Every structure is written in structure tokens, then in C-alpha cells.
Length: 130
Image 1: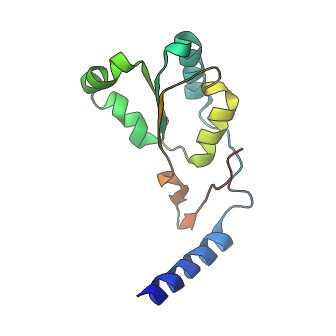
Image 2: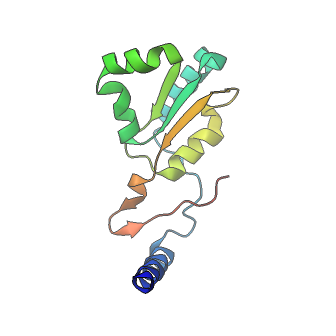
């Protein structure tokens, strides 16, 4: 069993190595309008932000799918939802590096990203945070 898992891991590693973009860990700009909205939230709420949700559409959906549940469980925690549908890891890295958390000291950051790094039969891996 261990041998089969090792062979599968080696095949997956080679597939990732051969199919990844040239620099898949590089931050990438995307969805500037939502980014600006988050910058405005960060600026207006400032140090009162104690809980940050970061991610893709799964994270974004936590806020708009049921506003009453969001308000009930996270409203009093001064939470912000910085999820953007379609984002990949590189997009989140870019947003973090470009001011979305500048000056913040949250107690908790919930990060759910990576699902969209798997698409079109290719695997894009982010392994270096800049």
C-alpha cells in the first residue's frame, strides 16, 4: 500500500511540475473593484476588525448566502468577508500585499483558498508567500 501511495505521489509531483505555469507562486492582480471595496472597509473599520475571512467564492458566499446568519454569528465580532469568487491563491497574495490588511490586528483570520488553483486539467501550485 505504501509503495502504491509513493508511486502515486511521484506521478502527481511530476504532473504538477510539468503542467504548472512558469511562476505559479507570483501574486496576480484581479478584480480591482472588489479590492478597492475591501481597501475602503479596511480604512473605515480599521483596528475594530477582529475577524477576517479570506478566500474564493466559497468564502464570499458565507456573507451573501444568508445575511441574517452572518449578522447573528459574526456581526458582533467586527468581521469582514474578503472572499472573491474565482480567486486563486495568487490573487489573495496580491490583495494582502496591496493593502487589504494594512494596519489591522485581527484575532483570527479564516483562510479558505486553493480550490480554483485546480482547473482546466492543470494544477497551479502556490508555495511561496511573498
